[in-house]
Length: 164
Image (cartoon, rainbow, N blue to C red):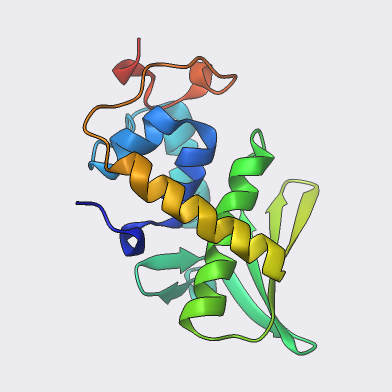
């Protein structure tokens, strides 16, 4: 049985992008590692300064810093083709920090090329994340993967060989 505390930021991102991808990922079925997009993401990750990583539990934030009385979490993305998935992943990190480390105030930003998105760690956003985590847990515990739903991301997805 899959438990809520097994959810990772990557799983949240997958779920917000494609539920089928999330279901496969949750079972240790990973994207095609030879896929150009996967290779590009891996190369970008390796270029990042390893001193910027902040591991907490089974999660890895790209950067955390204290600014004017609050904590700021930064995530770097190769692309923002799906900003809602990136926001969900960052909000998940804020949720974990706020609840796990009992931080009073934390916010986040996503940086991709020339675009920066800001996420507030508001009570309303954190409550939405709590509901989403329950939804993800129930979904991942289903026995069969969901049917294929074509999305704009299918063409460049590293999981497309599992769908087509």
